[in-house]
Image (cartoon, rainbow, N blue to C red; front, side, top):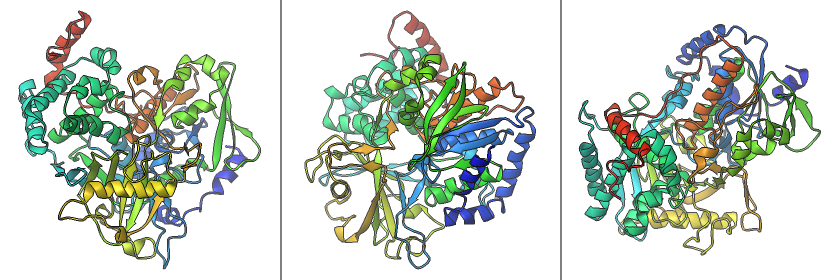
Length: 609
C-alpha cells in the first residue's frame, strides 16, 4: 500500500464521534467470539499474502467484498465517493439538530427492510462484532408483526399479520390444491376481491410456482406482471392490490412493464408465500425485520470498525473516474477527490467494481468494454427514483408494528414508524433537541404521476412541495373516520437525502437511484466474473439468484465476485458460501414435467389462459 493511500485513509478515521465510540468497544463481549472465528479464515488463505485488491465503492456490495477478501488474507483498499460508508443504506446526520449532548436527528435515503428470506446478508451480519451481541449486528434485527395496507378517502384499511405459521405444512401437504386453498383463504380474509378474481390470481400463482427455470427465463421474463395476472381485465381493487401494490410500491417498477419472473419469484413466492409458511428463511426469522437503531449505528459503523481492525483501508471522498484496461488486464483506476483536484491513478493486483450500475458503467472505457461485451449490455439496464423523507413527530406515533403500504397513493408511498423498534433508544433523550419523540420514514416510489395537493409530479415539485404532498398522501391513507393518526401540529421537521437535487427545476437529479426490473432485464445483467482476468463486478445489478435489486443481491454478488477472484488467483482459500432462494422439493416433479412441456411448445399444466 502506498504512503499516499495510507495518509488519505487516516484523514477520515475520526470523522464521526459515534464511529470512534463503536471502535472502542467493537471487540467487547459476545462480538469477540465472532471476530475470532472470522480470523481463522485468513490463516486458510495461502497465496493471498501480499496480494492487493482495490474495491471501488463502499456501499453494501463493496463492504461485503472487502469483508470476504480481508478474511482470506488479501490487502484491501476501498474507494468511496462519500465521506461515510454504506451507500444508500447508511444513516445521515441532520445538520444542526443535536443539542444538549444528544446526537443529531438521524436521516436516511429510505428505510431499511430485511425480509426473512435474506440469508447471505444475515450471514455477514452475524460476523460483524457488536458489543454484547453473541450474534454480532444480526442481533440488532427486530421483527415487525403486521403489515398495514392503508386505503385513501376513509376506506377500510387491510391489516395482515406477518408471523409465520406455527405449524408449517408437513411433507406431502404442499400440493397445488393446498397452496391454492391457502392463497384463496388469505385473499378472502384480507381483501374485498370478487371471488372469481381471487380464484384467477391463485391459479396464476400456481402457474408460476410450477414453471420450470427454462420457462421462467424464456417466457415469463418477457411477460409483464400486469399481463400475466390479466390486471387490465380486472377490477380496480385487483389492479391496486395485486398489480401496483406488488410492484411500484415495493420495488419502484411499474406492473405494466415489470418482469413476471422477478415479481413472481421474489416478491410473491420468497417474500410472501414461503415467508408465511416459514420455508427457506434465515433461521427462525419472521417475514419483516428492521434494525433497532439508525442503520449506521446498528450496522454500518460496527462493520467499518471491524474491517479497519482487520487492515482494510478506506479512501473516502473519492470519485472513480475510469478503470484503465491495457494489454488484456486492468492496470489501474483513475480517481480524484470528489470536490475536485488532480486526477491520480491507483493500482492493485485485482479490482472489484462495486459501484451502482449507473455510476459503474460510466467508468468503463472503450477498451474495457471491447474486452467483455457484457459490460456494454449494462447500458440497457434501467434505474428509477425510490427516495424517502423522514418526518420527525412530537408524540410517539406507532401506526402499525411493521410497514405501511399506502395502496391508493398516486406516489406509491410506503412507510414505517421507526422509534417503536429502537428498543435500546429513547428518541427524545438521544436525538435532536429533545422535542421529537418519533420518526416516520416514508418513501416515494412513483415520481412521474400527479399528486393530490398540487396536481404535479414529484419531479416537478420543489423539495418543500414534495414534503407537503407526501404528508398529504400519508394523511389521506392513515387518517380514517373517527381516527386521526397524523396531524400537522405534530410534525416538527423533515429530512430528504441531499443526493436529490434540482427539484422543481428543469433538470431534477437523483444520484442514488434504484435498479428496476422491466421485462428482459435478466438478459442484460452481467455475471460477477468478467472476461478480464483481474476485474470483477459486485452490485445489485449483477446477475444473482435473488434477482431483485436488494441488499441481499448486493451481498450475494460480492460473494460471487470474491469466489471468481479466488478462482482467478488459484487460491486455496475457502470459497464464500452462497444461499439460493428456497425451492420446495414437493414441486420439483411438476417443474420437471413443465420442462418437457416447454420444450414441446406446450403451456404449463395449470395455464388455462
